[in-house]
Amino acid sequence: QRAIEVGNNDGAAAIDNVEIDANGEMKSLSSSSEVYADFGLKAVNAQLHKIHKLVEQKVGSYDRYEEVFRELSGAGGTAITYEQLEEWGDVAEMKDVLNEGEVYSLWQRAIGSKSAVMNLPQFVKFNDLLDNLVMAKANFMKLTKGKVEGQISYHQLWHMDPISDNTPEKAFFELWKKALGEDVAKGVMNYEQFLVFWELADEWLELDDIQENDSDDEDEDDDDEDVSLNYHGLGARKSGYMIVDEDLSDEIRADLESEDEDIRNEAMFRRQLDPDRWDKFSYWEIYGYFACDKRMSSPRPLWTDQQWRDVRDFYHEFVEEDMKEENSPEDVHSYQFSEEEYDLTQNAIPVQAGEKGRGLQAVRDIKAGELVFKATNNTIVFNYGHTWRKMLFAFHERFADPGLTCDLHVWSWVQDLYDGGPMKVVMDLDSGSLLNEGRDEPGSAWEPPNVQCGKPDAIRCDMDYYAFRDIKEGDELLIDYREFAFLDAWPAMGL
Image 1: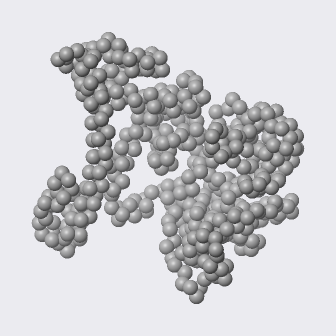
Image 2: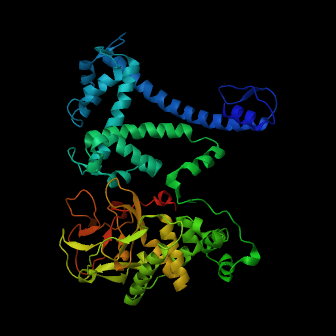
Image 3: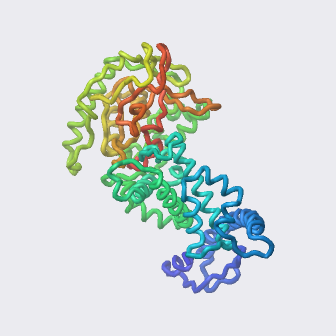
């Protein structure tokens, strides 16, 4: 259908129909325009491949459930009762895991009527629903540390695999709001609401899977309309400009000849970036433009107190100039998180932390639950991704040190300041930026975190950081960035 539509709109040739057999082979083609027919075939074959995989999975599970169903219904039986279903070992075990009434609710959904018995197709559907419910509950219990009566925040949900890995932030937030309904203002989700969210997300992923093979032309049109990719006319798009050899800087020329493959690759990427189009650079294009991979590959020096004062003074100058620009949004572009001050040195000092680079080391024993540090007047917030981008380039123009610019780049993150709120770019202009990441993943290379965002019993972060466990003097402070930062949300900021 897409091939016919595109072909007829093109005007070069009229296409009436294209016959394709079950294996995706072309049987006949009226008129001409094999290009469009080939385009259609690729889309069809991609879908056929998915269908074949699903069929293989379904056939395997169907055969297993058919065997169980025959045992429950008896020889020649065509239906089972709810009592017979409860006797099945799998259901009996699950009843200890699920809440009272959940199995019967699945029974009713599977039969779709007031019938007192269930046939084989309905039995298969029941098992699909049961598998989905058990998976959903397992994920909820993981987030609430085993408490079915617990509640989860938007931030916790966003970092839950696999849904967040395959769902854009904008769509994810819409599913969150739909699942919460009138309770969206509360900013937290209970078990029943999570089950609604889980099913909505499952439906969305299925629909997205069907639509993902739309044409590139259609995707480009959608980009112009998608506000999540555009902020004040500055979209998150590739630059696509190749710099000719004679215009290459001496640094890029040298890096292209480097013995280090990573440095060579970064230099090849940099030569594709047109400096005149800096205001279109994405997060990773900015990172590549300043050769941050190369600069972070060797130990970076600790900032002096004077450097911190200089960058804070520069920030205030930048904000003042930024607000003077014509055609600028009327609302605030960037601001300090609070007017408070907090002396981090009473708890930790900057150090070189080996392979992790710079870090923070405890200067005294800190008890679990103690405040370690908090967001202050040195914590700055950007309402727009482009304002953050402008600040980095203005900083580089002033200080002419790409290493310092790279520091500011990697010390920035995306966060919502309250559950369900808009995304912001956040940056600490003090040594709190040196807090390294840890993850509680036994068997991995990660060191476990000892600091957490928010009080131990809090649902969300609120930009205050507390000791997660007892910390000894000399220990490095570590936190799981996923507690507060949306690690893959830069495109949502137009970056």
